[in-house]
Length: 242
Image (cartoon, rainbow, N blue to C red; front, side, top):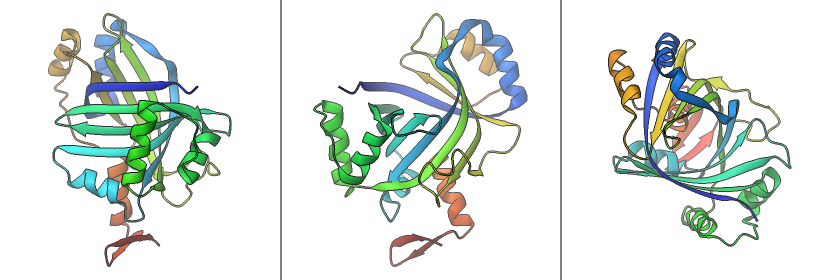
């Protein structure tokens, strides 16, 4: 049976320079230990409707956002373990439902709604897929990540994402982890994920370095970049690639 995971936490994003990331790590490096995946390349296939309804709703929303995606660590093969995820954000709190399966099983589910799972998370993902009329692969978002947990509080996680890139034209694994870059050289997208309060040493280090939260959506930024380049045309309410 596939593993299931439920997350409920706060997630804060910080768009910082490499110098700021190094200075922060100088202050907190002894307080954290690496994530089991260590340094990894995160490979995401975002699901959306032909009109990009989910990402348009997410961009326009002020209090509620919802995304469906498949995630793997590295470019997946048929037997690679991947995660099918339903991610919701309401009133600043992130709720994530995650189901583990092979890449082949995930693609079969996305394409044909085929599965033999019986769990609350599967039912929630099924409901979301049906609600959005079975969205399909819409964008591939890839980035290189370093992730850490705090030794005194493993519920606190900090990630550093670099070289965020996307593609909308090849939604298979054939092109590997290539894509159009949307984060400038020398920048880092940092995320701090907590269930309760942020550790005092981390909070103090952020204040000393004048590192403040910022808003950044990888899929949203990629979508806007495609629009800015006129690679997605809008007419009679429908979106199409060009």
